[in-house]
Image (cartoon, rainbow, N blue to C red):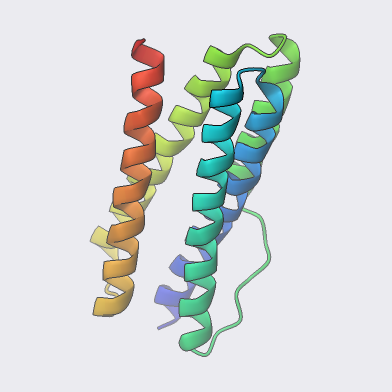
Length: 144
């Protein structure tokens, strides 16, 4: 159970950082449609975090408040890149895409490496599906 809760806390940390990263990205772009999408994706990651918090509480564990260093660096990078590239929307989209690719890979590896209850496995698989949808949407922006 400790491995399970440690992994859920790691995913929780990643989702919280992604939520902040998308809100930062929304502040760095001028396109209102892109701002809206980034805000939506930030809200989705916030929902993922909430769902993971609830699962931890069900397991009798307190959700950790530590930030994931890699994800936190990602959020900071978005902010710096936005400032350095004069709000270059395409550069920010690409960085968000990189983050979603990382997230999808991390979720897949977590699902493959750990044994979770059916409820948690279903929750993580659903979150992964939504992350892949976000990734696909970002890829379509890059291709256009």
